[in-house]
Image (cartoon, rainbow, N blue to C red; front, side, top):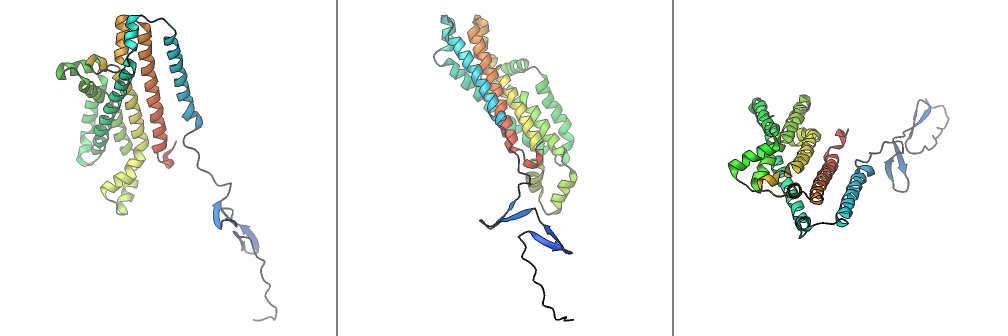
Length: 292
């Protein structure tokens, strides 16, 4: 019914404001930026926190640098006899350090190649029943003292770097294997069923659902294996594998404290440095929704 009154125009409202039953409301989720013409989140919206903090990035490397500097200054300012000088000169320290890094890197590579695919296989189908047996075998490798395991391998395979690497792999495979199996088994079966229900294949479900959810546990196992390998590589000297263990045993046999101290400090510093790198990789590679 026309009352003869002209409609009263509603006043213009700013973007994001609307009227419900005579009351004006403003949507705080989005605010129009007139300069860019794009909707941006308000300051109240939660910003993603930094995944790597400055203390985590700086403190440990700084401490290690100070320790290495103090060790270097101490060795260069004390009297070294001919035997100690022969052990520390001619690039011998750099060679042993590089051998140690090589032993750690190669053994860790083979641990990953063996343990992660095997852990995945032990959570699939009929192979689930074999998981306790395989884990028990891996437990034998780590339960055996590293020096005893290396001695047995030397008797069987002879002296050389390959023998040391096999012993290191056998000693470090358990953390990665057990964490891979535990990480995949801890996934909610309903998530896997939902992924299969939307048409994902078994391989697609593994790669896009299961492995991303298991990444934190798997990376924790890899980090443990890395540190174990750095420590075990010091024993490679007894199998002819070289490494910083040569400096340590040389310092013990010749009773030269500077040689012993330098080999020990470098081994500890390398283990801490590798653990620091692994912690950064663990932080970066863990999916954001799974951060602790």
